[in-house]
Image (cartoon, one colour):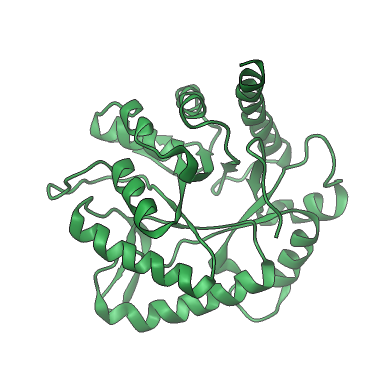
Amino acid sequence: MKTLSGNAVGIGLRQPHYRTLLNERDAGADDAPAFLEVHSENFFADGGAALRILQQAREQYPISLHGVGLSLGSADANQDEAAQRHLNKLKRLVEFVEPTLVSEHLCWGSINGQHLNDLLPIPYSEEALDLISARVERVQDTLKRPILVENISAYLAYRSSTMSETAFMAELSRRTGCGILFDVNNLYVNAVNFGFDPLPLIDELPADAVGEIHLAGHLNTDECLIDDHGSRVILAVWELYRHTLATIGPKPTLIEWDTDVPDLAVLLDEAQIARSHLNDFRSEAVDA
């Protein structure tokens, strides 16, 4: 299993770029991504073209498996059997890919035997912390490795929350040994939608626990910001990224782009911008 340096910048592996990335470009080129991230659930099937592509990708690049379906925050006990089936499929994929990183979202998405097509927020409370800690421990025991848990964008908040999202994640990491996947754009979206200052939340992150950073674009509507991963990272998010690097140090960073996927050159350009910011902070650390 390959490890990633703090200045590694990756991109999501998306179907329009399969041929160019895997057959036409040199994985060792200066502008090549340092790693590729895929959504785990897209590769759960036995065999087939998708799994062959993933096998080719893992031969050329470190792979990050990013899940969207474990529903770590679901309080529905009836989902346990379905959750275990999902987890068993993830375990099989992890054993096949031997990924550098495995991550999942801090959310819920299933109830009464139905799985919803969304990543829904949880209350940041002691009760939720107990439940999710047990879920994370089960996942890590099954996979025999720590995972990263990601903060999500949200469009509602719970009155029952007793702590901030980042304080919740810090305590979750302390209890379970899991890492944190910190999505800078998600924090920015939430800060604008709910009207809070994001900087104090970044200061609550335990630097050693953060194993990856996500960056993405979002949609600005009349009602709110929507985390759609369909455009370039805006300046305000880049600035928040720089504050994050100054606070916790350089971390492997991924450019997410899932809707209106552009030419590969655009993704590589975004990755280069992230790389330049990371290099600034690596240079400062050396100078110090």
